[in-house]
Image (tube, rainbow, N blue to C red; front, side):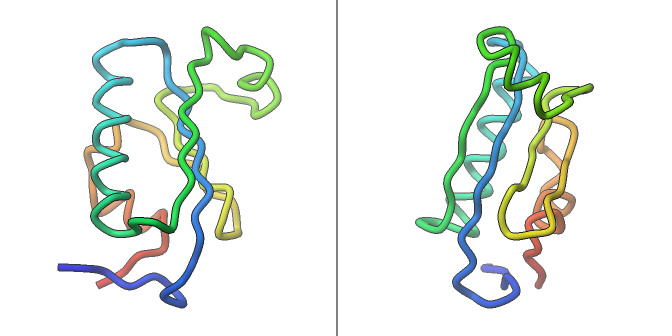
Length: 98
């Protein structure tokens, strides 16, 4: 079952901050990619950022907990913390409703 975003053609810009190859980080990447491919296929850009390799970027974004998803677009910017296994929480954060 497909959900609806606010206007049906929203482009999503997502940044997922992770800590290396930890199980929690790998789960967050897999869960988020699955959600994106199911609900917003071809309408998203996902950047996965390992804070161990890009400390300055993590500092600029004021990252305090991980995994952390920052939804840059559509506005307003939102932040979701965790392994992205709560699909309803992620969909709500993306603005997708049923």
